[in-house]
Each structure stands twice: as C-alpha cells, then as structure tokens.
Length: 542
Image (cartoon, rainbow, N blue to C red; front, side, top):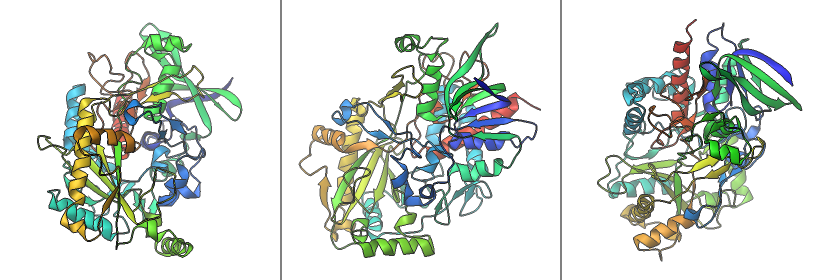
C-alpha cells in the first residue's frame, strides 16, 4: 500500500461542501489540504449546458447510479437516486435552483442542537458571504462572492397563467424566495452565469486549484477511515483509498473532513466501524465506535407530479416535437444563451400551506411547461404542463445502511416515503390544492385536462393512494449524520460538526441537517461548508 503523503486536512468528496472547504481552508498558505474525489473532472460538455442534466443523471460518467429499495409507500416502486460523481458533485447535475429555505428551518436547527449560532440571523451572513446576486448587495443578499445568482433567461405563457391562477387562490406573487419567508410564487433564481451552469467546482475549486497548498486527486475511491486507539479514545488519522489501480493511504495531521454527501458519508462511517454495532457485525464490519444514528434520519422531498393537457398555448412538448423546433432551440442557445436549453429543470416556483394551521408554507411547487411519464422518458406528444408539489417537512424517516462490507457495493437506501399518516394527509391536501389552482379563471382559456393522476381519485384516501402512484424523489436527501445535543441518541455530530466519540473527524455536508430545509438543499449545504470552514479555522489557529 502506497502512501499519498501527509496533509493538515483531508477532505473526502469534491461536491458542494468539499469544494467550498478546499477554497476556504487553503486561503491560509501554510495549510496543506488534500481533496479526494471518486469521480472525474468536470470537463464533460453537458455539465455546463443547463438542460444537460438530462445527459448527466443516469450517466456513470457523472452519477453514482444509486437506486432506492422498493418502497411500500410508492406501491413497491424503486426509484433512481442521482448523486453527483464528478468535481462539483451534485451541483454539477442538479436543478441549479438557488434556495436557502425558511427562517423557521434554522431556528429549529438551533433548538435541536442547542447552539444559537445556527439561527437564521447568524447563518444569513454566511449565505451573503459567498453570494453574487444579480440585484447587488442588500440586507438579505450579497454581491461579489463566488456563488452567482441570476434570473432565468426565458418565460412561458402557460407558467405565467399558472402564477396568475395561484394568486387567485391566495398564493401571492413575490419577487424573492430567499428573505426567510418563502410564501408566494415567482420564477426561480438560478446558479448560472449568462445562461451557463455554475457548479461549485467552477465557483470555488477552480480558483483554489491554483494554490500550491491544495492537492486534488480524482478517480479515487475512499474505502475506509484510518482510526487509531489512544488514551483519549479513537482518533481518525486519515483515509485508505484506491486509485490508478493501486491502494493508498493518506494521513491527516489535524482533521479528516467527510463531505461525501447524505449517502456517501454515512456509508464511509459504517465501513470504518462507526455506527450501529449490531448492524455492522451482520455485514462483517468490526464495530469500533457505537453511534446508532449513523445512516438513520434520512429525509427527502417527495414530488407529486400532476400533469395537465392544455390547448392553445405553447409548451416544450410541442416546441421540441419536430427537427425544425429542435434546431430553433439549439440556435437560440448558441447565439443568445437563452431558451429551453438554458432552462433549469423547473422554472416557476410557489410556496403554500397544505392547511391554514401551518405556521409557514409547507408545500413547494416546481412547475414546468412540459410533461413526460418519468425522468429519462421522451416528452408526451400533446401540449401539457407539469405541476409538481412537495411536502417540505415530511415526518417519515428512512435510512442508509450497508448492503455488504464491500466499499464498492452501493448501500441500501430506504426512504420510507408516505409511511406516516401526516405525510399521506399532506400529500392528499397538496393534490387537492393543485386542482384548485388549475380550476381558477386564469387557466380556463387553455382548457386544462388532468392527465395524471386522473380525476377519478377524489377522496382523501384516494388522493393519498394517487400520491404513491405518481410520487418520485426531487433529489434532496439529507439528515443521515444528524447534528444534535449530547443526549440525543441519534445525533452523529455535535454543533461543531465533530463526530461523537472520534477525534480528528468531522462531517460537513447535507447529512448533518437535523431537519430538511424548506426548499432545494444545495445552497444550504454550501452555507454549512462556509460555517464549518470558519469553525475549523477557529479550532486550529495559526
């Protein structure tokens, strides 16, 4: 086994969190950092063209190709579970939507971990620090940072009509989803620069890669952490990984930082003997640190994709139906960097309440001027739009667990969608609200006709059944190494993101979220990494 050397910090995973950590830690020229990524460099053309996510998801060049276990809540269906396997991680294949979540999310985090520094008024400056907002600096937005936020470069009459219809049922039009209160409807803002995807590899890693104190290793698969027993307890000294057909070790003088995501981080911990002891033993892994919460607390946003046929209005189904239409779309992007090829997967958003007693919106809409049976399938041959609606605060909890002690074998991902009464009630209410919006006067001229799930689902019980038929992930897994207080038996890390019972080891990614944020999860993960970098620097002053 070859040594890859010693570094002050080893970062496992060059996704959203890993790229930010690498940038911030190497700002100190005296700190040496190794960044290890299982995927390749982000030089694949389709990463950078916004509509290219269609070519990146399900592609082994950019995706881990995970699948869930068959889910009873989805009538036994298993889902694809895309996670980025490339520099930039999931920010290289995601929907590019810039969304922080709501103020209430971070108040809840602070209460659950007993640390006020996670409250909204403390994390807001971290969001602003890295932001370069198209409106410029303000009380709620930053300018000049690495993370560019722009308006989308398109509009659709059918989406404008849906927004008008939403206003007719009380969902007001707003200009900004990122002030701490998401209520209302608007076109999503996106992480793009002049119609080109901005991933965290370009925004954060590319400038850091010029620094001599950062070493980046791609195509390297981390097999386990190197734990050493000391008088003070277990300490992580680095990692064992494979790359280039050889086995390697790398040592960390200060800390190892797991940033492998909500699936990868718990999987690596379990392979290293950190987790529920009985579960590890069943799969041939010797337990070293008993942490039963590792891999538990999995949360995700389940989107319910309602499809409506329409008449007398353009949708992408019809625009892209001919070779002439496809050529026009291609030329519009080539010369103007606009049009359908600049589209995020979802363009119009709306936040609403499933029931009036909800303190803040608990539903999020992603509305698209297109329709298809499922991801990867061709567009339908008729004009249509899709109104996907998510329960932002699901009560169901799933898990990520070993399938085998082989580090190359994917873990078992069990989301447990719609497994609680509350989630089924919210799903039924969400579908009913969508029908109210579509029945409003502003959409009437387009004669919307419900194609999926179908008008024969009427009662609350029937609508909950329909949710299981049309529900699919919107790719926001979090929570599997949750942050919490010392007396929380499921807490894996403390509020400083240090793994309990192990020295020299932190987890820095979406897995530390105790509760999922009320919206898309990429930029909250970026904020987590900004905060972690500050905490790490404070723990190891020069």
